[in-house]
Length: 71
Image 1 (cartoon, helix red, strand yellow):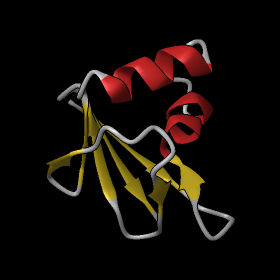
Image 2 (tube, one colour; image 1 turned 120 degrees about the horizontal axis):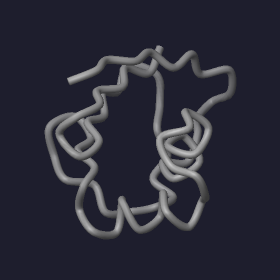
Image 3 (tube, helix red, strand yellow; image 1 turned 60 degrees about the horizontal axis):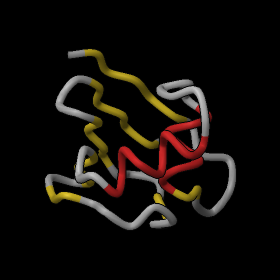
Image 4 (spheres, helix red, strand yellow; image 1 turned 180 degrees about the horizontal axis):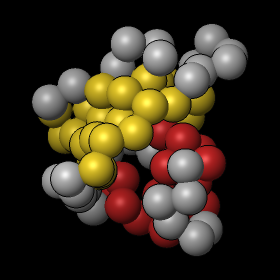
């Protein structure tokens, strides 16, 4: 499992955009599918809202392989 940190410069970032910005997928559509199919955990809970507002201090796990800490 790999771990990443993402420094949030704005108030929030939408979930699918965060996945795309970190180059975990090739397209925004792939990021949206990952979220919709239940492969994203947000603070230990499954998150299926593609446009969920991700804030500082949150932790995400993508597909059980990648953990992202938002700082």
